[in-house]
Length: 418
Ligand SMILES: [Zn+2]
Image 1 (cartoon, helix red, strand yellow):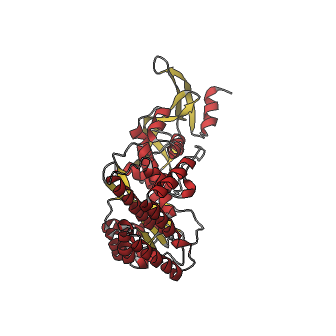
Image 2: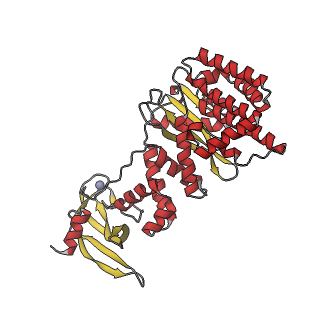
Image 3: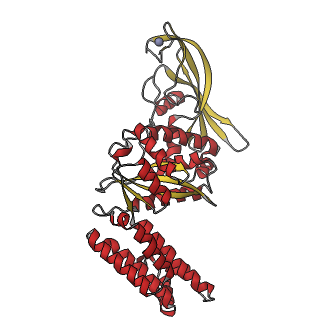
């Protein structure tokens, strides 16, 4: 079997396409490329892209595509791409089965890039395959854009809406994550838009129509206590019950604890390492952090009370229903008042009191935004990997791709006949 025929089989080419020339060629002092030149038989007819009628070739132009490496060699396909002349539709450009128009990469190469960028930074993929990252991001945006536009949201019932930092400094985006109240499906990132205002929620509501659903279908919206999102949900998701979820309440409790710590430090108390030892749940701490936390809590009564209060606040969601959870919260309020912990008094007596109904609205579904926390983690990893995205659309594309559970349709061989 000759080498050209071997490449035809490897690429899955079928008539009228055939490999006419192939081999290695110097591309630099240390490197070679593999070229595979494809052509069609003289006298071949191609179907008109509009009506499908077999037509004669009008003219052709040689084009080139980067393909996956053949062993260590960058591989390029080139082919004469014809235009046909249809009696009815005049001169029309043909497409080739191995690449999309204007891409410069084969579909298989693009499929490889899409798989790699899900796992590693785009810049690292670019270095690995020897292409400029701008070109790879273009591939990413193309496929993600297509798949996201086609995504079906018709079963959507509940969402979590949150802000996420997109750049160092203070740039924020709003992310909308689908929550499945029966927890049958994995959470997915549906929507991401720059800014964190009521209008950001409006942009999501507007986007719903194109995905087989509409704003009144959303029954539950889990949000933080910012006035912007409350206003956004009231205006744009009219049927949604607002839930201030556990994640956001506990975030505020964490901030209150940190305020207590900073107040102590401002009084000249030495609290080295305290920030890390006091942050997070006991079960996630390393042994030395646990020891330090215990020591700090014993030495500084205010810290001890603050930690205990935060932990006991966390118990709120263990209660089976809203009435018992409400009693529990009431208890925390009087405890904070007795202990004269100003940051917690502020949190419980003012902030949580004002949002009582929405906090208790997490019953009966036990709505949590654990999903949004997880997806926020993915977004922050993507952002750090890219060392801050210059173009929002690039960050959006990689986030939809890694957290949006998109269905991608890239053929992995070229076997479909033209
Ligand atoms: Zn035609």
